[in-house]
Structure formats: structure tokens, C-alpha cells
Length: 187
Image (cartoon, rainbow, N blue to C red; front, side):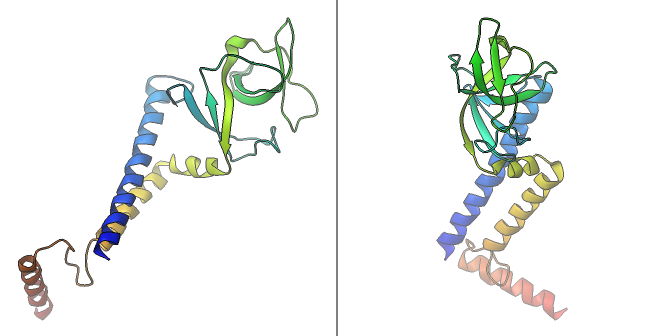
């Protein structure tokens, strides 16, 4: 049981630390370095915020894009900056001499204007269903603080026995702590 509790404690700390690192990296990339996306080795993760690519990609999904892939063909799904500077993920409907025509799978018409390759941010690699909602919530500072506090509480609870004594305490330490606890209860 001690080993299982210790393993659970390690897993919780790893998750808490990874969430903190992810949030810190994203914050630095976007707010300090003024990048459009936080990417690692050319891959970026984005949350889908509309239904324009349904049923292929749904609102709330996380998509992974490859910023280094620069070969595009009809029916590829790409992420690009539109004329307003918003980041959009749609399918290539056609490629002409004037530029690329895109369209969301759920949309009835093509996007307005011709997209130039310089506005393409990356090419769609894959998705993780509904994980966007979770990522969005852990970016909230209040939720992040609650995760940290709950992680600490759970780790403390699983690292002590029913008397509140650390599981890894030596027999002498346990005896001393039990005596101190009984003395406090008598007062």
C-alpha cells in the first residue's frame, strides 16, 4: 500500500508540474515573445472554437498542426491567418494561380478572397476529441491555483497514515510523533 501511495503521489506531482510548465511556456511564447502560437519543434496545439469543420473537427477538440510542412494540395486541412488576423482552420477547396481557396467542411460557401501561402500557419496533423475544453479551463489562473492546492492536499493525505504521521518516518520518529500527539490531546 505504501508503494501505491508513493506512486500516486509522484504521478500527481508530475501532472501538476507539467500543467504549470505548459501554462508558463504558453504565456511566455504568446505574451512576452509575441508569437502567434506556442510550438515545440514546429508542432503547435490549438483549441477549436467553432463548428465550421464539423464533422471532421468539432468545437472543443484540440488540433495538432505542423508549422514546418509547406507542401499543400487540394483537400489538405490547414491553419492560416485570415484577412482580419484571426487564426482559422479550414480545408483547401482549390488551388489557383491567384491563390488558395479554403472552405470549412460545415460551411455552404468557400471563404472569401484568395489565401496566399505566406499566411498559412501550419498543416493539420491530428486531433484529440474534446480536450480543448480541459486545456481552456487549466489556462484559467483560478483553476490552476485550485489544481495546485488539490494536488498538495492529496499528496499530504496519501503520504500520512491515519494518525497524520508520515509513512516514511522511522519507528523512533513515529513513536515520538505519537507521544506529542497524545500530549496535545490531553491538554
